[in-house]
Length: 441
Image (cartoon, rainbow, N blue to C red):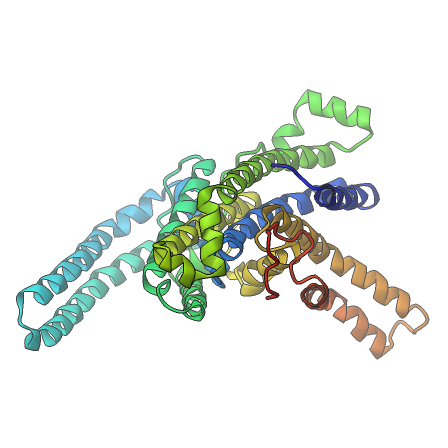
C-alpha cells in the first residue's frame, strides 16, 4: 500500500494539530481526542466498505455500534448469582415457550391445508405469546427486583474484555445478515429505511430490557485491558519518571493509561486498513466496485449482486460493531441513553464524505478531522463569543445568550463542513483512485 504525498501531508497536518493540543492545552486531552478518533476511524472504515465499495446506504450505524457495546457487558461483566437464582427458571421456561411457539407455527403451516393455515397460525402465536409473557414477566420482575440499586440484571460471563470486541463484531454481523436478507434485494432506499428502523428498535430494547442491560440505569465498572491509574501511581518507576519529567504522578498515570489504549486501538485500525486495502485491490474488490457503478451490467455478466451486497454489508457492520465494543471499553461503562443518530450515524457519514468515499485512508483522515473539530469547537466557540462580547456589560442579555449558545457552534460547523465539501470537493479530501471519475453524490 503506497501513500501519496497528499495523504502523508494531510496526516502530518492532523498530527501537528494533536501535538498543538498537547502543548497548549493538555496531553490528556490530546490523547483522548486521538483515542476517540481511532475508534471513529474504525466506524468510518466500516461504513466506507458498505458505501464506498458497494454503494449501500446504511443509516443504522448507531444500532450496530450499540450491539457492539452490549457485547462488552454480556461478555466481560461478572454474573449476578442472586439474579440468576431469582429468575433463571422462569427465563428458561419463557425461552422454551418461544421455541415451542416457533416450532408449532412452522408445523401448522406445513401440515394444514391452505384454507386453515392462517387462522391456526394466529391461534398458535396468540397462545404462545401469552405463555411467553407469563413466564417472561415473572422472570424479568424477579431479576430486576434483585438488588435493583446495584445490579438488577443478570450480568455477563466474566470473560476478558478484549474477547468482547470479537463478540461485538459477531453481534453486528448477525443483525446485518438478518436485515440484508430482507432488504438488500429491494431498492437502496428500502435498505436505508430498514437500517434506520432496526437501529431504533435496538436502542429501544437496550433501554427497556433492564434485566439484560440495566437499561437507563447504565452499567459501570466494566473491566479494562489497561491498568488503573491508582495502581500506576503506586509504582516507584512512575513516581521517579514523573519527577524527572516535572509532571504530577496523576497526570503521568493518566497519560500512560491513554497510551495503552492508543496502542491497542492503533493496532486494530492498522490491521483493518491493511486487510481492507488488500481486499479493495483484489479481484473481489474490483468486482464490488463494478457492481457499485453498474449493477445491471454486473448482473448480466453473471455476478450475484444480492449475495455480494449481503457479504459487504455484513463485513462493514461487523467492523462498526467492533468499534462499538471498543468505545464502551474505553468509556468503562455502557449507557444506552447516549446512543443517538447525531453522534453514531450523522458524524460517521460526514467523516466518510469529508475524507473521500471509496478511499480507506480518506475515511480515516475524515474521522480524525471531524472528531478534532467536534471536540475543539466548544472551547473555540466560547473564546470567540468572549472576544466578541468583551465590551458588553456582564449582565447584558445578548452577551449571556451568545455565551450560552457557544457550545452549539459544533453543530453549525458540521453543517458548514458538509456543505462546503459537497460543493467544492464532492469526492472528499482524498478521493478514490479510479480510472474514471465518479459522478457527484
